[in-house]
Amino acid sequence: MSGQDMNPQDVTPEGGHGAVPTAGVETGADTKPARRTWPLYEVFVRGKRGLNHVHVGSLHAADDEMALHNARDVYTRRNEGVSIWVVRADAIAASSPDEKDPFFAPSADKVYRHPTFYAIPEEVPHL
Image 1 (tube, one colour):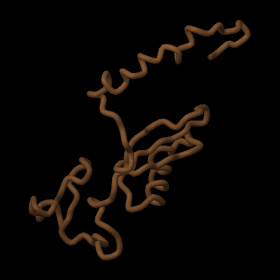
Image 2 (image 1 turned 180 degrees about the horizontal axis):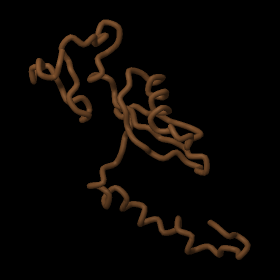
Image 3 (image 1 turned 90 degrees about the vertical axis):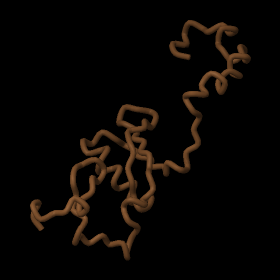
């Protein structure tokens, strides 16, 4: 089917990457879930010099194994990571930035948790 023969209803913007033909395209719906129903995964990568994992992006995948392989292919193409975590986005519980002040306010009441009450020896460079 050429671009001139296509009906506007036969194409869809897939992930914002332009028009993708949908008419006459094998979807594989009988063997695996359609891509639009795949869950969203958040990807965290630990760099070679880093000690912690850093959120680098998101992707859709049919299962955990596919998410891990796709994350490796997309987010560590230049050999910059040593460890990858993928987490289903619906499994993440997070606080809202709008609730920052009331959510974190109780920590201000615990001044004993701050190192201002302790003498730090000179030989301790980082605390």
